[in-house]
Image (cartoon, rainbow, N blue to C red; front, side):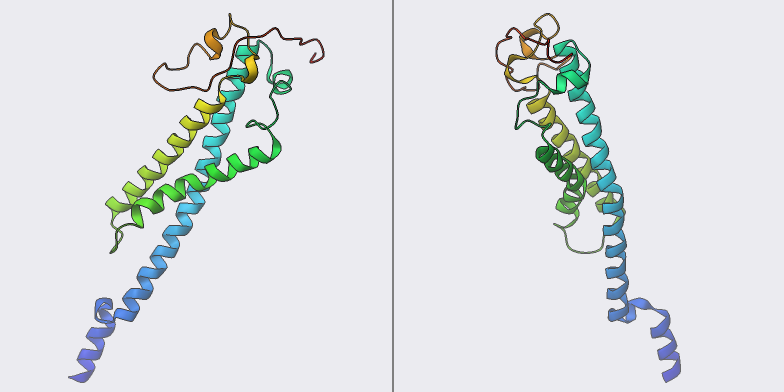
Length: 179
C-alpha cells in the first residue's frame, strides 16, 4: 500500500508542492526571458520607426534631405548622441515594463488571458511612448521651417487632436553653409 501511495505522489506533481513551485518558477523565468527577447526588439523597432517619422517631417518642413536638416537641430534635442541613447533605453524597456505592470499586479497562476493582457499593455506603453515622442519632436525647433511646407510650424498631416510642441515663428534660414 505504501508503494502505491509513493507512485501516486510521484505521478501527481500537485501532491508535491516543492516540485510544483519549481515548475512554476521555471515557467516564470522562461516567460520573463521571452518577454525581454520579444519586447526589447519591439521597442527598438518602435523607436526606429518614430525616428523615421520625425526625420521625414523635419525634411519636409525644411524642404531638404535629412542630412543637411540634421545640422539645424539645436543642441539638447532628440538627435544628440546622449539623448538618442536615452530614447533607445526607454523604448527598449517600454514593452517589458507594460507587461510587468499588468502581470505582476495579480498573484496566482499566469493564465493565457493575463499574458495576453500583459502583451497588450506592453504595446500600449510603446504606442504612448511613440505618441509622446512625436508630440515633442516632430515639429522643427526654433522656427526652422518653411511656412508653405509646414503651416503653423507642424506638418500638414499631423492630427489636430494630438498636441504638438511649438516650433516658434518661421524665421529666415541661411542654408548656404549646409550645402
